[in-house]
Image (cartoon, rainbow, N blue to C red; front, side):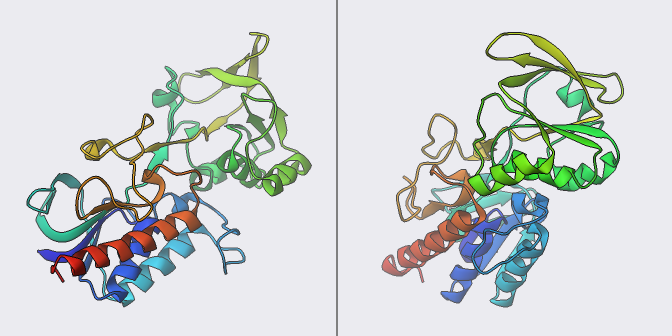
Length: 302
């Protein structure tokens, strides 16, 4: 198969790029290894996307996908094995695709705590998605680890199910937006400041957490049935280490989303930038697609 534009990743950046690419007259393919929408499908409520009052991440993602399909984008659900930049080919698990321009928009995934019991108890009380697993903790005690927007949103969401919700934060002030922080402080969520999760205890399920106060070094135990981890993200860039990356693994791009490789662009949470939100991902995708159109046109490839 051959396309003018191939987009790797079906989150907001990739979907936005697909909309702008197809409307710009490009034959466009979106390669997604899982479900379209990326991390926003895990968000119960989005209220800071312009023009959207309140909507679930899943609903917004489906609207973006349907819009892209309506303009003619083709979705290929497969996993990328490698990219041959010299010959402009993307090798998939079951096929190979040629492209004129490539946009990489694979996003990021939740950062883990790297504790001994974390992997063993994932799915048995340890979770990285409150909207996915919150209902399983109805009437139970849960903790959220983190202090940013995602952690606060998770804690507020879990209040709908759990009998008690704790927020564990390593600092003495939240990093979340003021509106979210204010809502949390009024919600009844119990905040444990200046603390980190030292250990997750339990054989077949989470029974308690060992916490460490980062200022005093004091250890304490918190009895909970579940732990929701929200301590940041890791860029999904391992397969693209041939690109220029910063120390954290984020792809370095120019303002037009171009990379050090001709005809290759990067957009969304994968990219080095100061703010990672749905609106900035969508903006990145639009810019990347416009840059791809310009590249193809100027080089006589379209």
